[in-house]
Amino acid sequence: MQQIHCLVVEYEKNRREFILSNPIYSIGSDPKCDICLISQFVSRRHATLVQLPYEDGSYYYRIMDGNLKGKPSANGLLINGHKLQAHDLQNEDVIIFGPGIQAGYAVRATN
Image (cartoon, rainbow, N blue to C red):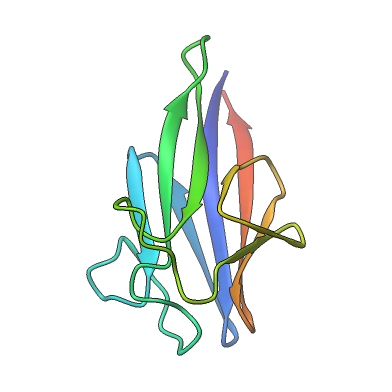
């Protein structure tokens, strides 16, 4: 059974779903980001998603504050109510990038 990893972003009455399959995603207000969030509360390079393998061949995503070079975002990440620098995402995790900007992480099974 395969899995589909999704990031559902909600802000300013918008809702966008991103199917995750790439090894790395940049998230931020910079238009060059893979997942672009236009908001004054989102840093240009706010967060990074990195795909990591399990021993069985499946994978999961880790979200990290800031960019891959280690530069943190201005506002940080609030994940399930906790301010964290990095987190291994699990189904139904909620990520808050700033006031009114959040994302839900979902893992769905497929046949």
